[in-house]
Image (cartoon, rainbow, N blue to C red; front, side, top):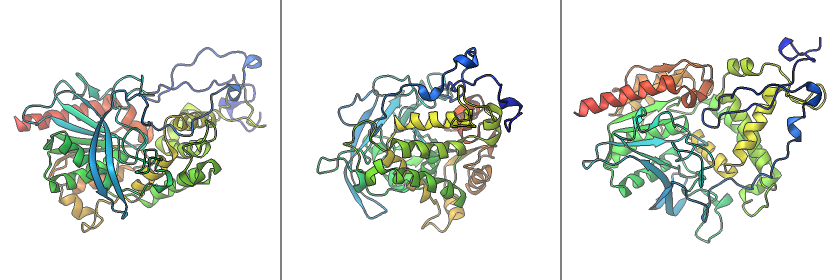
Length: 429
């Protein structure tokens, strides 16, 4: 026997390219394997060239997006953005007294399409379909749900792919932004929509950063935040998280086709898709747990490939797949910019420290951790739950999926969210 173990012995059946559910990211049931002699390398499949950017741009189908112009913003970095536009989606109907508004904030590579099918203007189905919708835990027959695309993103809100005042894409000229800048823009969106209070502000991962900033900045701006739900997130970016982010940013910036951030006029196949794909592969390894990757793939070779020559193991093929998929729907500049915004996240900055900032939050709080999360560790969530005076005891999802458990474990997270929202509704009644 070679170095491959029993699950990946040299004469083991070929392993097909992992088929992945685009919403839950779970593996779909495999098709019956072909004979090894007939198996073709997954690398031989013909793919169209990746676009220079997967950003939504003016002239593209808007899908279910709506747009609000929210004005000029002076940023924490010292930069200024004029004529900022926010892309957002809504579901449900705002109550006459405005008491049923819920704000949903997406993670790094998410967007405003929280629920709904893929289709014109939306390359993927909603990323939280099991939690948001009619009859769902966040029931849009009862709640008016708003989901904006984040400032600096690439799905309709002002970002690096958007036109600058001179009409050309911002590209490398786009200023750095922070979570506080992003929330300042979302506050103006609330004003534009006539919303004076949020029954709930909810988000996970990077979205959780903004949830915590909303809990402080919303009341300062005269917007009541009754309750918040911070999921798989932290009050302050850790050294470990910064360390994981650093090579992701470097992979994109080292791609010669990144061109310093000015690549928007490049032909298909000539953009920074290799660097963006590599960044996603690094990130994806932190989104899943070691237990899950080993249980799903172990040392199995990819079908039709030989790891002892130039072939890959199945887990390598899986990461290649995710890197390619993101490069076709996202923007490299936005990935760098949003990652940098996560690095500067510190709820306690200029507020007397994290614990002082958490103590100042008056909203009722739900904090949810994922027990196998190796990016946002459960202790990061414990710190939040312990620090907010009105926080419920920490809730923990039991999952083999790691950080992505907040996207996948809807059978656990759904009842937790439904109970929390029901409690809020009963308290108001």
